[in-house]
Amino acid sequence: MIAPWLATASIGLISILWAEVVRDLYHLLAHYWSPLGRLHNWHHRVFRPDLTPASEAIYRQAHWYNDVPEALVMLLMSGLPVAIAFQLDLPQPWLAGAGSLYTLSFLSTAIARGLGIAGADELTDLTHRPGAFTEPPAPWFVNRTYHWRHHFDNQNAYYCGTLTAIDKIMGTALSLKGKRIAVTGASGSLGKSLLFHLQKKGAKVIALTSQDTPIALPESSEPIQTVVWQAGKEAELSELFEKVDILILNHGINVNGERTPDAIAKSYEINAFSQLRLLELFLTTVRSNKEIATKEVWVNTSEAESNPAFSPLYELSKRTLGDLVTLRRLDAPCTIRKLILGPFKSNLNPIGIMSADWVAKQVVSQATRDARNIIVTINPLTFVTFPLKEFSNSLYFRLFSRGSLPDSN
Image 1 (cartoon, rainbow, N blue to C red):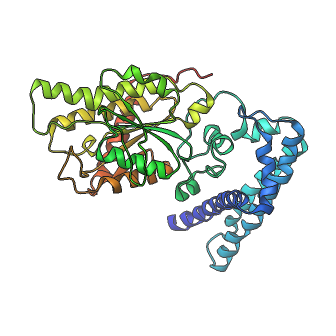
Image 2: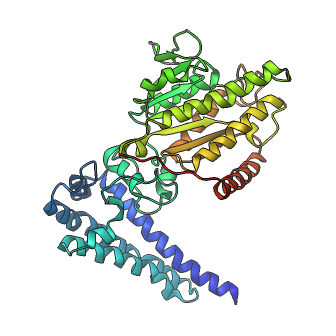
Image 3: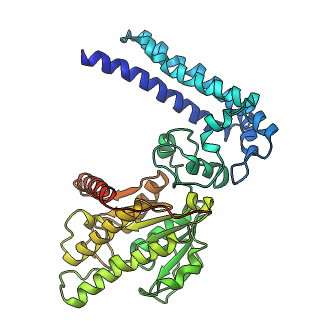
């Protein structure tokens, strides 16, 4: 009895998901095929950066030229799951029509907005409502903050309308083009590789290093912007952070087998407390809707957060950092990503197995797919141990601590 009901439920769910895929592909095509683009451009003419309509007339026209044709295509294509269900003689094949009913809701609300029916926009156009953002871009469902970026960050990214799956698959869930990205530990192997691959994606990179030596990247004839800083003097970077879109916390120290008081102090100061101070300093720059939507912090907590690293103080300090970031994530005003990286060859780990260049390339690739926990390792256990640790710690912190989002302008 259970199997037929599961099959029936699956048919309806798949038909709804198919309708969403059609919607996102239609939107994508509108940015690359001029006949659809001319219709879709009405949608981009509507909104100001605060998401208020430029005019009521343009707002209504945009629905007739963009939303209604989009819904009609969705309705037409929603017949495909129905035809397949009948062709395969599946149980209750008519349930494959759930996608058609779902699509009719989009069509009817688009018509209502086009007609200017009172209250239709407030009730149905949820990703375009004006007002202060109350949360960063959501990871799985499109919220106002996520969709704002399609209009005002990069129109050739963030295509999804309800679910973010297509953007994740295509690598358009985070645009790095034109972003000002600062990387600490920039003189190290991973730091240089991150700068290189970020620059290839169109980012404007800034090297943050404790070494007073200009940093040049492969295939670049000129040194990139380099800012020298020291642990304990994080406040000196406050003016710079106002202009930075993404901060990557990548610096660290490995005292290997040492356990002296000085080694303990250095490990926690560099690997945990310095990074936490930089994180908090950067978060103070997140105030406006634009900053909530586009600013991010990426923190290299490493695989040592959940697995042995055979360097006790490195493990302990990185786990402290990881736990504090998990706690801070709960009410941070912008997206915070973790980099969970396995052993790569560097000055800190000369016997590392992976190359820093390959690791950096994977980090950037996963980030553009909006992975909030970016795992790059050869150890399959990490793909099990870290998610379990992150989920349990996050749940524990959520239940037994309090916090709130700062007020935004």
